Length: 70
Image (cartoon, rainbow, N blue to C red; front, side):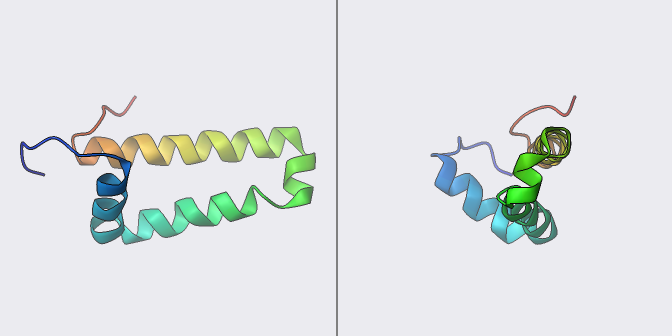
């Protein structure tokens, strides 16, 4: 990634869609899964999926210099 600042979430999303297709597919699959009524009814499962999604997001952004991985 170059030194220019990101102009916003849309720019970041476009960059990730181009450079991180597998990540985006997994992240979106979790988004869809987390809208399922059975998943929403199971608080523990929903929370674990949310944590996993957040972890993937932070790791991916860190690879692009946007944030640091924990």
